[in-house]
Length: 132
Picture 1 (cartoon, rainbow, N blue to C red):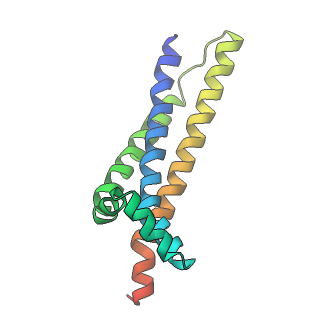
Picture 2: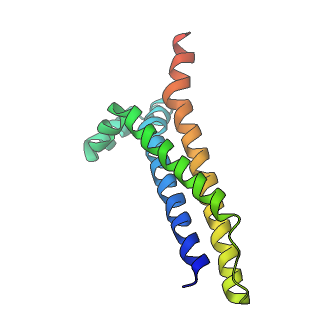
C-alpha cells in the first residue's frame, strides 16, 4: 500500500462513519414522522416494540446530532486535506486512487444530505408546526 492509498483509506472510512451517524438522525426523526403521516401508527408501535433502541435515539437527539456533526466535520477536513495528495503514477493505482476519492466524496455528500433532512425533521418542522 502506497503512502497515498494509506492516506486516502481513512478518508473513505470517515465518510462512511459520517453517513452511518447521519442515517441515525433519519431513523430517530424522519422515520417516526413518516410512519405517522402515512397513518401507520401501528407499524411504528410494532417497530418500537421490536427495536426499543429507537426510543433512546429519539430521547437523545442532541447527542445523536452532535456526534453526526462532529463526524461530518472530521470527514470534511479529511476530504479537504486528501484532495491535494498526489495519486500514484502506476495507471492501476492511479485509477484506484481516483475511484476512492470519488467514493469518499459521494459518501460524504449522502451523509450531508441525510444530516440536513434529519435536522429539518427534528428541529425545524416541529417549530413550524407549533407556530413559533
